[in-house]
Image 1 (cartoon, rainbow, N blue to C red):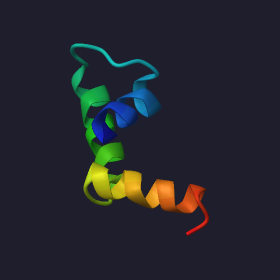
Image 2 (image 1 turned 90 degrees about the horizontal axis):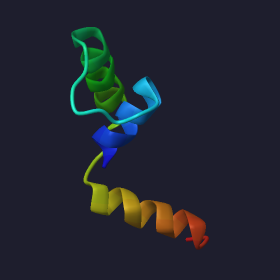
Image 3 (image 1 turned 90 degrees about the vertical axis):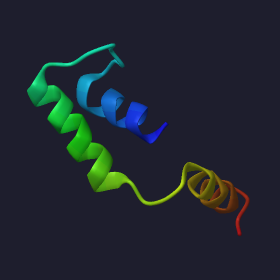
Length: 52
């Protein structure tokens, strides 16, 4: 999910393959923003939304 989001941020669409510079940019965006397990991220987002 986070990698798909990075692809959308960098490339605007999720494709089956990417040119090397785009693939590296997606990997960098993912790495720069990744902050844990998706389940943990969803729980934090839910808690923020619910005011916890």
